[in-house]
Length: 91
Image 1 (cartoon, rainbow, N blue to C red):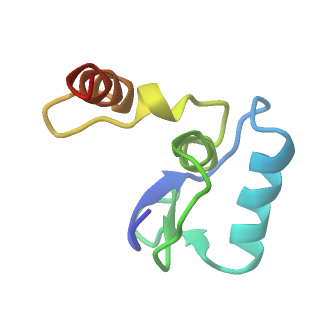
Image 2: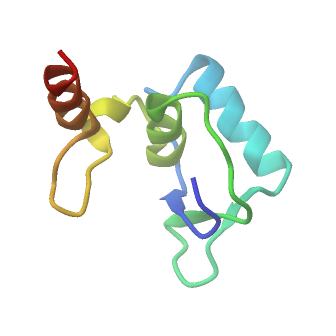
C-alpha cells in the first residue's frame, strides 16, 4: 500500500489473529496513524508491502476481508476477475 492510503480507525471484532497483530504493530510503529482531517480514519505514513491482498484489506478495513474481492480497479474489476481472465488467456 502506498503512503497516504487510509484505513478505518476502529477495528471490528472480526479482525483477529495475525492481521490484528499486524495492525497493532503498524500503529505502534507509527506507520499507521490518526488522520488529521478525519477522526474516523487512519493513514499510512510510509509505503508498506503486505504479504497478501487479503492481509492489506483486513488491516485497512479493520475486519475480516477477502482481498480478491475487496480490491478493485478504477473500472470496478476485482483482483479475482483479473486473475481469472489472465489464467484463461494463458492457456
